[in-house]
Length: 590
Image 1 (cartoon, helix red, strand yellow):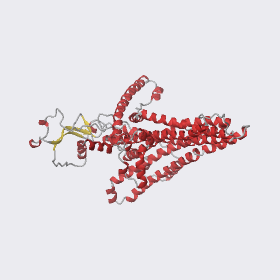
Image 2 (cartoon, rainbow, N blue to C red):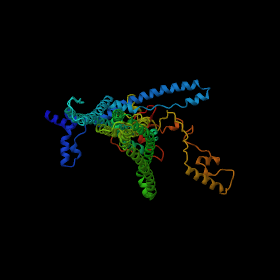
Image 3 (cartoon, helix red, strand yellow):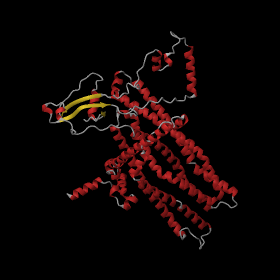
């Protein structure tokens, strides 16, 4: 029996979890999988189970508790900040300038970044970064060894030559050892960062799933299905990609600075031509990054609208088929998809021109400018050791130049994704009011139970009151939407439309404005018809926001119960209340 239990544990563990230290560093545990992949097409069962550290349960449990603590900390900090803000407003009550300067209080959302950082373990990330920094520094040693060997052969191999590593043969051995160490350290660093990326994507996905199950009706009204789908797919992927580029982005400036210092030692003042060329690329980078950020937000906007439209079509497909509305809805989806593709195309062209053409070509153009300047300003000729070493250093700079802008791009996109995720995870949640057993204080004699059914009730509600929105919360005042600035083409079209409208002869009462130029509310107001809005004081009162009042019922386990009533009487609300999807008022339990 013990042997069977051990075999089951071995099958549950992944090859990575079973690997020893040497196998983990050299990735030897992948050898059987690679051999199998050379003979057949791999299937999911061939890969084996997921690593224990990457499993959804562990990722969710590690982050969920930290997120709850962070939400509580954020609420307490916002409460104290709001009290301080109100005190400042009270002091400046007689000064309009100070009041305008203080403005409205804006609460600070919970810090999702620190939750994910602490959930994975910040020491793991810094350990991976330390490994990558060491590998980046070791990457310059083969270049210095190359310079040493070329000078050794240029001078005719003198016996008193001072080699970098004790002896020229030591330099030759170093050309093999140091690249091997660089590869080993970079691989280990990438394994840790990839685990971190998978951990964060899994943790965020499970948080979103848990939030979707507990979000309240008022919170659901502030988002859409399309946004949730995009956050589950696109935003989590952006976070994963950023962590894969995190090491490159952080170490790239160090590599560029060290490479420039070593190039200066080789070619002297000619280096400043290359530095000036790179400084000229800084404003180009700024324009590229700003355009990429704008286009990324536009792509997400159109993607949200398209997914929302498709979900609405699928939910109402029966009505669409009955009325033969496939054509108009298909055109609307096509229009949204065309706008999304247009934004994606612009984003792709901006990325290709800004990164591939400018950033990747910079290390190629730089040596040409530097060598041309060196030949013209230096008295000595360009020898082989200087040329080979300078070119090798510029080759080292190619990857930092390539990954640095890509890392900044992923940082911008990840920042946008984290803002969207934090905003959604901070929405209102339902308070759990369903309990598995009757709470203490519920008297069986007060319940509407038949004598035969008292023994085994499945659902019990005693004088329950429920609402879709928490009636004790103060409704947020609706701010007027910001006016969008029209383009020149839109302004001309609006001006032409106004001229056409003014040229038309008026009919009837000339003193009344035209209904076509007014909104519905303004049109009704011009006819002296009062309009009752949902934001009126009467509708926002506590009593009017309660949906079900004093509901008492008992449903026996295994019984068939029908709920009958006219439209709008609360049948669906009653079922939602039983399922725990409404707000409980005055401590009602189900």
